[in-house]
Amino acid sequence: YTAENSVKFGAPRDTDHPELRQPIALEVWESIAKTLDPGQKVTILTNGPLTNIAKILAAGQNATSIIE
Image (tube, rainbow, N blue to C red):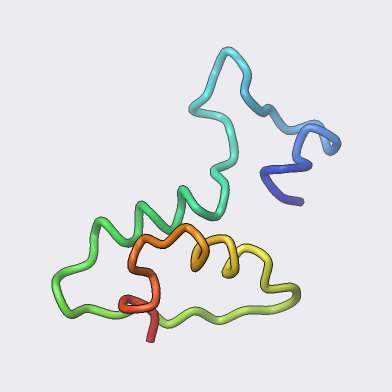
């Protein structure tokens, strides 16, 4: 289940309670990237389609310099 199809499975999405919404991959990535110290890297372990990684790389937010 993903943020994009969570409503189909009964999870709240864009409701009156946004704090209950499941974050999308790009939001999680931005949160992680903000907490890194200069020079620190992230290792990404994937299982399945790489769509979310592609979206992160396409966002052009210097992701390639952070990913190890």
